[in-house]
Length: 104
Image 1 (cartoon, rainbow, N blue to C red):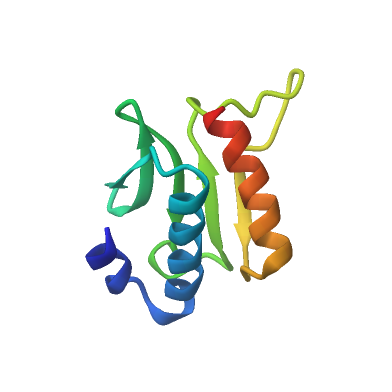
Image 2: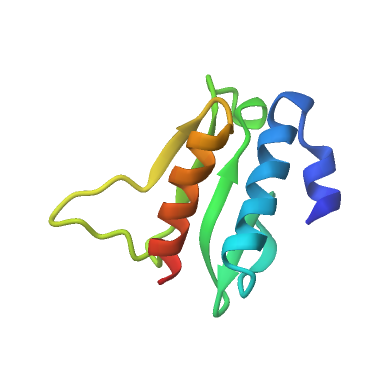
């Protein structure tokens, strides 16, 4: 995983490194892997969170997403992909909350 993160363009690499550290601290039971060539983590073999590089997909910002295995259900509609332009303390707290719910 760290080798794959090292390949990510500088603009998204810092966010990806911080996100990877947060996942390892919050949900150490998740297995690091790649999913469609991007960093992801799996629970019981199924990808739950994943990151999409802005550079690779030529988008305005990186996104962190959750597969259908994530337990984020809120009524009849809920978000599963989040734009991630920076990764400061507020974003880390929100991501930690989402991750805990997703794998809970």
